[in-house]
Amino acid sequence: MAQLIDNAVVPVSVTVATDDNGNVNITCTPNPVPVDGISTLITFNLDTRGYRFRTVRAIELDTPNSDFPYPSWTIEPTLATLYDLCNQVDTFKYTVNIVNTITDVEYSVDPEIKNGM
Image (cartoon, rainbow, N blue to C red; front, side, top):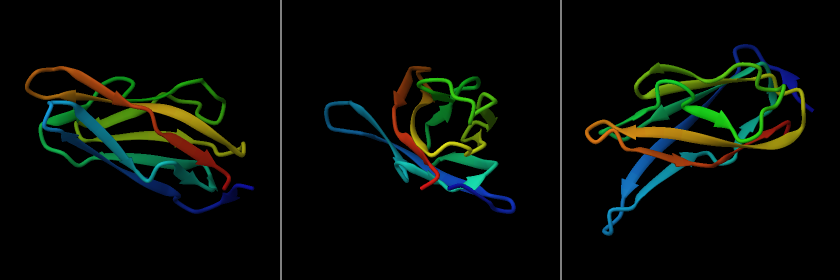
């Protein structure tokens, strides 16, 4: 069951790597994101140069849910946040949307958030 935690923030590191064939691979750590506190802010830090978060909807739930009452905020090109009420014990799939800063090509990955561990 979720508990009240003062100033609960859960950081997620987002990294991008390109393999020898030119395929872009995005990794979110941790995955799934463990959220156990009511009213938690999940912060996504993009740790790879040459990429930025999408300006709008950088982080999107695959299926809308009342635990996530607001869309994500892109605070700066490499920092996005998502507010999680954490009222439901469940696993939620979400999409991280990033953009190559030179080509403007968008890429995405679909990790998970696990509420109420």
